[in-house]
Image 1 (cartoon, rainbow, N blue to C red):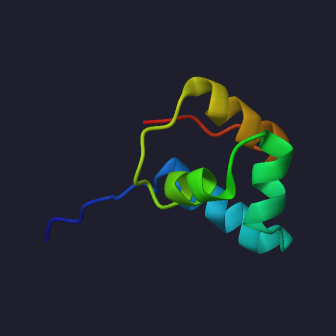
Image 2 (image 1 turned 180 degrees about the vertical axis):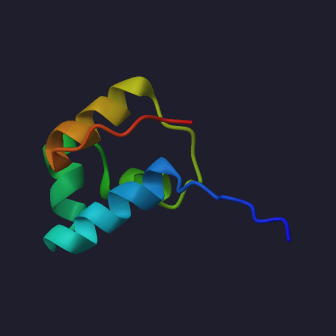
Length: 68
């Protein structure tokens, strides 16, 4: 049987961290200096994310996730 390993996207990883910490999207967006709407799109993997925003969100959440 072929089993495929599906790696989580960066948005999914951040969402899990936020749920685990009880952190609100609005707060993360404010701390990262991006709009709540844009953060929502990032977390849902609907938009491309810049390296700058990866760093900002990682800094706010205390993570070190990479794109790709």
